[in-house]
Length: 342
Image (cartoon, rainbow, N blue to C red; front, side, top):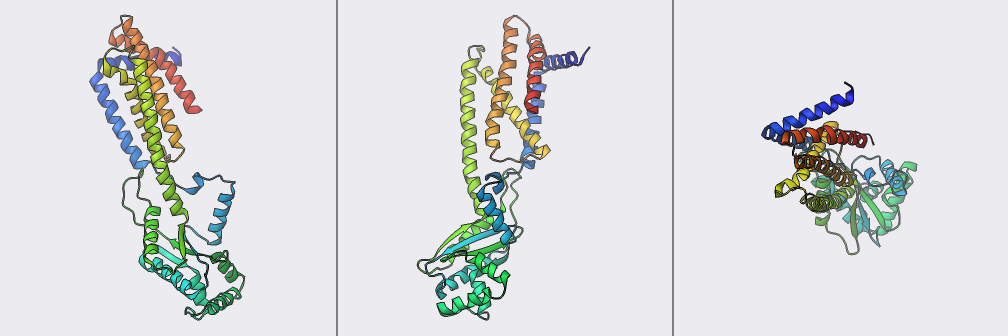
């Protein structure tokens, strides 16, 4: 007996066993599916990194890496302050208020660097009272050496614009599981936005909060509704097609949707496998999930149709299940292997 025949015999035995022990088989399938979902939810991480959404060789990726290298950074929030009178003492004091609020009221911040720090450094630790004194203080720092000049240029990249850099470390998060965790980017962004809103600003001064936490927040906010919509649409379409295809073959209503149930169980097993092998859930999975659902429906329809054909030919439920699993089951096993390899 060759390997192919042994596989066919094993599939036939499985079909007969399932037909003879329906309740036990259904119970085992449901329990293992629930375990798989639990493993998946506990082990799958939501991947929201910026590198997932931008091309590695794009100008955006280059600019982002340059910015991180310039600021020697890991986790950062950038607050862009724009004003037509950036060197006005009132504007500098407003920047200083933002600086202090981020440093004192956000526990996770490790360092906060702003143009106000430069002005203090160049003016003996005090904020000047006139615009001329502000500019002289900045020039003094710029003249201290190439590194100081580079720092000033980073904090004031163009006239009328300055950047406040808030670096942060570990953030305490509430454990909601790995699949939908409370992300540190959510917490930091909310706190920076709150502190920015509480700081009074002179007329004409605007702030924009940016950086990786903001990007991740926006990406997740766009991704989750799309994921739900795409999967729901695919599910509804497949649900309709399965009903139209199978209702002519099966007279009893609920049997029409058996292939759909097997596909959902297969998705549960897939989620469990992702958790075991450490795969992350990201935007790419938006396209994979409907495809996986479609494949599951396809395989389920084929095995179900083969079973119905044998029943219509007069076979008993046990024999029909054995024939369907031995013939169509082997073909589907080969197709599954080809899909996995591909």
